[in-house]
Length: 124
Image (cartoon, rainbow, N blue to C red; front, side, top):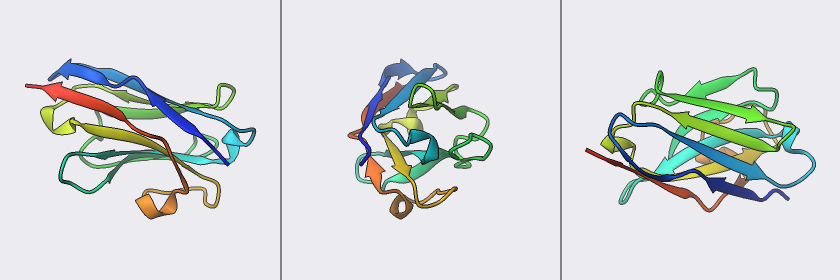
């Protein structure tokens, strides 16, 4: 069982930056692929970024490539999402997710564990 707690969300102006953190409980964090997803009002949850257990593999949604960076610190059981050049369309609840069954995952159904989410609001 893994528990995930996101933090770092907030209100920021367009062009600004935020860094989200996701702290995970459990001894086996370093064995999990980790992902960030987001869900805007009235829309489905969508993939944002993911990172393999070692950090060697990463993947990003086209909409955030070049602006967002995912990273992890296995010693701290934490995964991060650095978000730069934020746009109003980035406004959403951001969720952290984890899974131990595969080394790479970019789909909602591929993740077994989810955090409660943190709100990110980008004003124009």
